[in-house]
Image 1 (cartoon, rainbow, N blue to C red):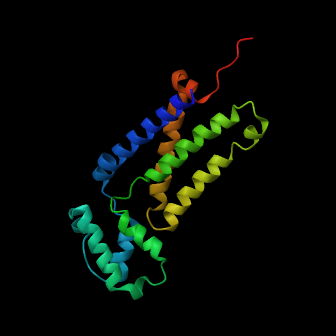
Image 2 (cartoon, rainbow, N blue to C red):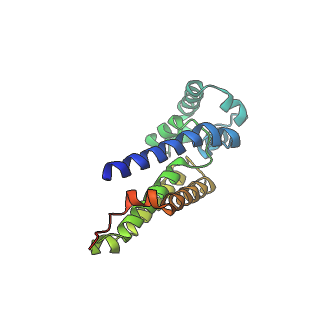
Amino acid sequence: MFLKSVAALCILLASFALFNEYVTKNILKLPRPSYTFVAEQSGINFKMNALYDLNEQDRKQLLRCIIDSQSEKFSNIDSKVLNHWVAESGYSFPSGHSFNAFLLSFIMAFSMHHSKNKTARLLYVLPFIWAFMVGISRVAIGAHTPLDVSFGAAMGLFTAVIFLYFDNTKKLILPAKSKI
């Protein structure tokens, strides 16, 4: 039963991730806030469309070159954050991290809330705190805007509600009731 649950969630997450990355983001084409920040700080006047017209490797290389050549303008930003900006080379909207975090947190909280374990029932809010922190971190490092994160979170919650609405998928999460 546990393996079925994990497999179903993995398929759901992978399906959304692929759809989000290759369909949704490419239709909406909203640039990452980190890219806008790099352009503003560097003083280089380039159109975001032109940046995204580059292939992924060239886009990463250009961003790395801009950041490295003007390191004094980015000296107050941790190198790990700068590296993340370069690595996250796709469009911004919606946040896939927030989608996944809120989808998983809702399913985990639902399972905990319906658990026979009293401690688990009391702690069912913890997954939501974790998901909220994931969303906050995505905004804090400049990978997403609050709208990106909010929309991703809403989509994750909506998908979780749909997932748990049907008895067949709900059975994957909840333990079977004993027939006494």
